[in-house]
Length: 93
Image (cartoon, rainbow, N blue to C red):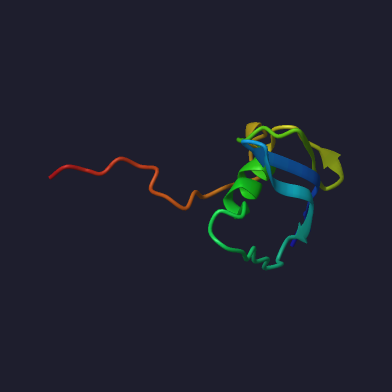
């Protein structure tokens, strides 16, 4: 099995003057199971969206296998993100 490493470093994020994420560092590799724990509104989903590249922030360093990516979601087969809420329209019937 090919091993890949994701590193997210120096992530800063604030909302309405309130610092939500400060100097976050995350590292994981293929096969590891990682859990993000915290209260509602503490920034877990925001962190994942920043890593994926769909939320802009003042500072972040996202690396996959040592290579930097500003917007990982634009690179085919690099990262995947499954949102916590429904994203497909309901079928009528």
